[in-house]
Length: 302
Image (cartoon, rainbow, N blue to C red; front, side, top):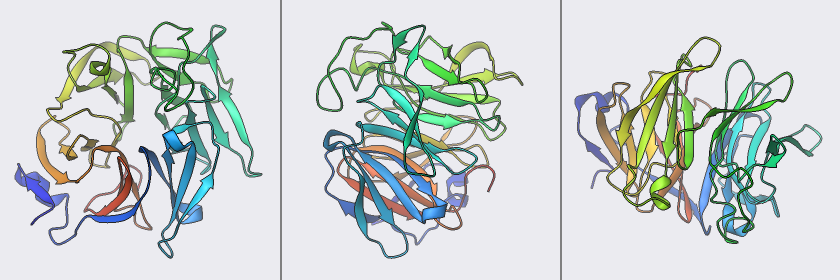
């Protein structure tokens, strides 16, 4: 049985017909936030309820605990220097792994009020860090520490590379979650999982046009709507296609928003990232497991 569902001939150019989905490891309570770290030839990912970061070593296939406790990490990314940036539910902050092994705090508040629970993060080529801040880490004690929101809303924030100043850039979402830039950084895509709190809210990825300084232009437009669970984390490839998580698969959308195909996954998909020496291996976190499949595309800049 094929791991693919081809809905548009454009999908054929993005996948390798004989490549198969591999389960690399299982044993998480909720796997999230994969990031490929080239210098370590490894994938790091979060097991949020177990308050640990896991490590898959691509050189020998071994899996180990990278850090525990870790402040209930969720999303991760790399900055231009190859340092890991993390979203901490427990610490309600964005942190960076320094060369000496310390985690330094980059942001934990705005206007004197603590962030909710940073969820996912991307770094723009100007060095600014963009992060979503829904309440999932403070909604209960399962993925963090139950607490009231001091901000009273869930926004997307920008952390300035030079000053460290934190400011909201998107304030019209209910529960902003995954996010990614288009290859030329003229569009920011943001998933809204607010249907978890507001019944009937569209389960969608929204697109925000940005000017050359990174300011949002006009109103958001709906890029895609999910009919199986939620869009959580997602990535954009170098051609502008969006590879998005859902309850049953990785859904691949062309840059015009057309669903061109699916990679079937037997667990609820939370997130994904491109990795491997040629950045053509898609690493997938799904419920309790880490999966991977080779594809015929790469991230922007590769």
